[in-house]
Each structure stands twice: as C-alpha cells, then as structure tokens.
Amino acid sequence: MSSDWPDRPPVIIALGANLGNPEAQLREALTWLQAGTDAPVRASSFWSSTPDNCPPGSPRFVNAVAMVFPRPGDSPEATLDRLQELERLAGRRPKVVLNEARPLDLDLIAWGDEIRQTPRLTLPHPRAHLRRFVLAPLNELCPDFILPKQHLPVHQLLALAPPDPDLHRLPS
Image (cartoon, rainbow, N blue to C red; front, top):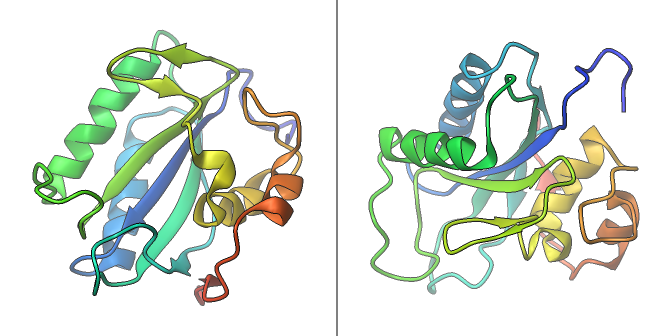
C-alpha cells in the first residue's frame, strides 16, 4: 500500500445502492465517510452490477469500495454503528424481503487483519471474497491486498470470482 497512507489498519467498506439516484447516494456516503476520519478516504470508481440473489425485477446496483483509516480509538463495532446510521439517514428502512432494493447499503468488509464472529459482526465479511461487485472496485484500490482468512490477493480472487458479464465501470 502507498507510503502516504496512515500507519493504521485500513478499513474496507463496500458501498451499493439501487433505489433513487444511486450515484448521488454513493457520493454522499463517501462525503459522510470522509467526515468520520482524519485521513483521506480512498474510493474506487463506480461500477454497475447485476442484482445478486435479489427479488425479480430489482434495479441494477451502483457499487464502489472505500478504504478508510479509522481514528485512534475507533473500533469495528463503532464503525458498524456509524455505517448503519448512514444507511438510515439515506432512507434505508428495515428489510421486508431478503436483498430487496435499497437507497444505500454499506458493508464493513475488513478492518485491517481483524477476525471477528459475533451475533452483530463478522470480519472479514463472509462473502466478500466471492463477490465480483466488491472485488472489481477493491482491485482498483489495492490489487495486492489479502483479505483476512484468504491466501490470495484481491486481483487473484477477482479472476476466480463468479462471472457477471454485465459488470462494468461507470464513466467518471
């Protein structure tokens, strides 16, 4: 990783939206994430992806990945609380149907090399290494990053991920 990045564990957050104006929602979420740290947030391009395991007729997603450096004293649980609050502020409501459309979805993918399994939080995210819509944007930021509990870097996981022929980077 770049030498100008803070000497703190990187926090990887996946962003997605498929209701309202998804690109605007992701830009706003990145602004909120920047307000929660004293280091620059690194963000991927926006990507368009096919809804995965969603109800029929679900709109396409816009996805991105952000790398955030926590402030000293921050914790994965406090970050999860903040991400859920940001989702609520964006209009997300408790789900009625599994994987239903949503104005904002923020997933805590990894917190440095932390491994956690609690009723509230699993680190690393248990399916991140299989999701092309997470791996493609993450590959832009840090192709050689190895997610906790994985042995291959992101660029190799991406090559092995299930295909999404319609996944594509959106114009800036």
